[in-house]
Amino acid sequence: MKIAIGADHGGYRLKDEIVPFLLSLGHEVEDLGCDCAQSVDYPDYALPVAERVASGQAERGILICGTGIGMSIAANKVKGIRCALVHDMFTAQATRDHNDTNVLALGERVIGPGLALEIVRIWLETPFSNGERHVNRIGKVTQIEEQYAERA
Ligand code: RB5
Image (tube, rainbow, N blue to C red; front, side):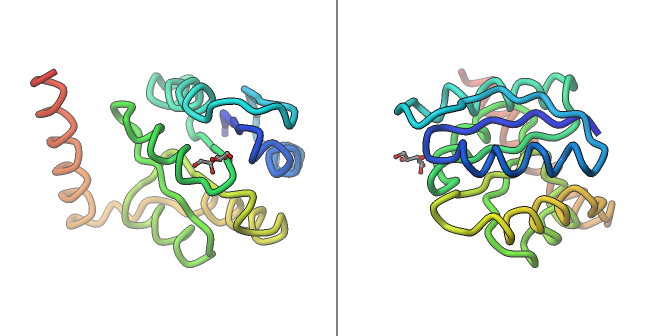
């Protein structure tokens, strides 16, 4: 799977653990930064990752900041993105099964790398259920996105 990944200064250390993990699982990774502790703005890293996924250049995206919150808010502004902030294994599974999320947000200051890698593995391996009620609900979310795009 082709995966785009990005982080701010609050998340780049966890990104540096996730990238080799993804490669070890056989995925192709596009690392869009950042790579040091110098303060940066999370939307500047969320946008290129979200755009890669929305355009189909990447199948999935992973975003990391201190809490994961800023990254998830920013990514969800991009049309076609369903980004979930996940800090436990149950939600990692459920958000793929129910929401068909295409971007995962994590908070480096919230969980340790062991749990983070397990969340990444589960989130990548769990297929969307394609259950009728879930397809219907995602369709309604897409309708909201389209209605607001028309008003802009
Ligand atoms: C940076 O200090 C921090 O605000 C950022 O990494 C993130 O947690 C924002 O949601």
